[in-house]
Image (cartoon, rainbow, N blue to C red; front, side):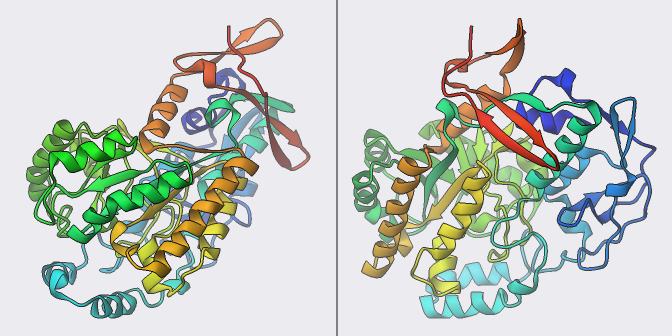
Length: 453
């Protein structure tokens, strides 16, 4: 019951007390937990509907306290994983051909895609995505359901036990308020050839980025090309196999292609993966030999595969760490929404930064070739530089975030007299933090220096 809280906060396990109120129903469905928290899963008390658009039962009143132990009408771990692993999609009314991992139309579309003019592609995609504004869940432009649910449970648990301050290990190294990563998916020969100039642009703002490279068919991948990216301090990851949109179409085909994908990862020394078009099936991830993945959007209203993980923090899918995409792709911004300004990115960044989450950005060298797009991208980088100086946002490479989150997941808080100290790998960069209860609200604070033995 408390595993997801301990994984997120790295707080002392003995300070968290909760249990299941009664046996769970056999059916899953949607319900609310307070006014603004939508959940999907089994419960002890109601038969919940399969649609998120209906009037839903509120289970907040079903919470009980027995001798300072919080008794919940659901399994918190199940609810969180139903969101982060997108299990709610297949069983909800949102499940439609447009949301399935590979829509029926995708095979002929991706076969013709290399021969279609950009204006035709954009027109087809805008038609396919019409109605996205009517999707109510996950919430646009950033969904914070996981964060709200965890904080609500923590608040109730602290009240039940009479705890006013709960120690935990701060989310990011060196006391950074939040984190951000820059990633570039390289899709065509033109995009590949633009990569050196894109690295120049990133470096002019003091940033390094991750480049996701397609191993086969799209363009030639030379040793020199990969070496230049590494030599300049940027990162190389594998993007799909051939970007034909069919990686997750069939389980046997997936397993066959994954053998080649894993081989490229070993040959390139790549730790991270991203699938083409952000198609995904998290149930199959155990076949991937990567440390981390970057294929799951926070909210996927503008992507061919709908859904979203509803969180702005990294989380584990088995042994793979998921670094969710928490902002809109440049292609969607420029061509679907027809915007060449960074207002949406800034709005999404504000929501992520306020919650101390991971701001992940995906742009394509292929769509940054013209002057207008480059101007917009430079405005984005200037905004990130401002976040770094004003908000103390940690601008990192994806593998640096992966290494930190794995280290943090192995850390623990140990009582040292009347104080706490942090133990575990990388503890020198960790910071002791506190969750403070003030009425019906929680507040975070963190110490400025390391608290280690």
